[in-house]
Length: 163
Image (cartoon, rainbow, N blue to C red; front, side):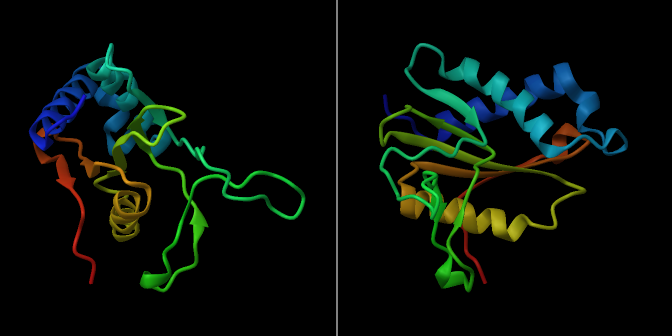
């Protein structure tokens, strides 16, 4: 199934609404919960919007369909992105949330999530989103910034202009 940007936006909006309705306390700055914990709850709610459509929602998923090689002791190397054009080395990456069909190249959505008060690495997240779209053929890449107030949340679709 193919999705439009508007359909993806609606699924994300509904997911954010449910997260704030059921788990708002974990989003508060005073709660100071790690981003991964919040991402996990978000992914649980998002997955319902892709039920019966063969897509799975995964958190911190790093498996590649292709064998990208092994390290010097034989461990398989997972998902890597090349950041050379940004003056950085290629590195292993762990997307906050992805919507995809496992064991295929059908990559629908990659989301990088930050809390409004913990967004010092926002630019690198924007770069990662650009490269997930460019190098790994994700149809959509989203930067999601949560705030204590639901109305202050940001949902921005890539690719992004990077200075």
